[in-house]
Length: 213
Image 1 (spheres, rainbow, N blue to C red):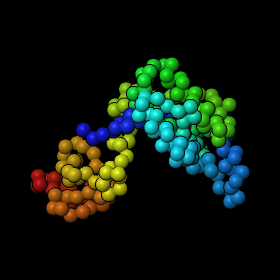
Image 2: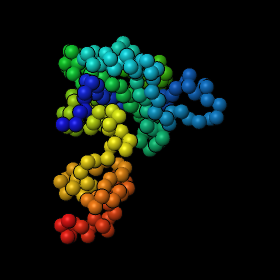
Image 3: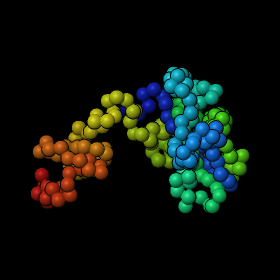
Image 4: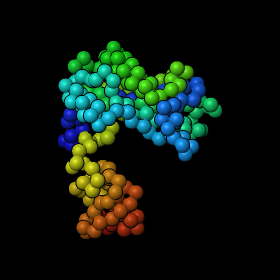
């Protein structure tokens, strides 16, 4: 089985609706070009913070101030929120299997830690009007992602870049109902093809489908 939680790390996501605008005041003050940094996905923490966080996750615990990914979705698409309001999400890595298990108390503790960490940089959350929180267990129960691993595999060196190409051909994968990775793939003839999903050109695929090869 392809490893998806080898280091006991999984996703914790908080979707938030705010009756107002959120922003990053400290970051915005440093920009001199007028770019709206709300349109970027921002990550908190230094490299050392992330390394330490990962070490603690392996033990089923977390740090007091976890690194957080922050994305203000309505900054790039204003149609998904009423005028003058925002929707965003906060994401952080958490233990797939915390020492306390995933009960409501643990869920609330991790939620509070992630929101508090984000507030060091993110302004406007005091106008929050609603949120939806997903723990790794919630991801698994709702979308069948093992322990909340919605990346499908661990993002190690052997699973990134050109190494993402599947061993089976794109045709075999389609026939079996499986998926193909974005990028390059190989046909049975050994020729390399490229497309939105790494599949052979449509005409060639239709001819082969009819011939059974």
